[in-house]
Image (cartoon, rainbow, N blue to C red; front, side):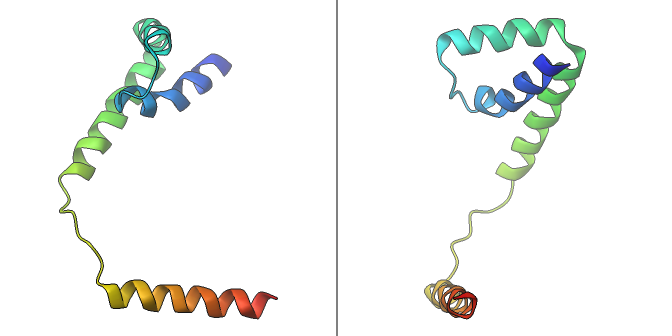
Length: 79
């Protein structure tokens, strides 16, 4: 099970194509033998597909500035 936890953490990198060739081969070999990680891969791919369906919205500059101002005020209160 410990190996599955390690592999599950790398599934996101695998889906995004961010693993080395060796890492990709290792995770693919593991996925073939592990039902748990096969299921996780299906869930990750479904989540990735769902997230891509959302429109790409850029917040307004005023929202950014309001957020930054609130963070700065909160940080100054902590000091």
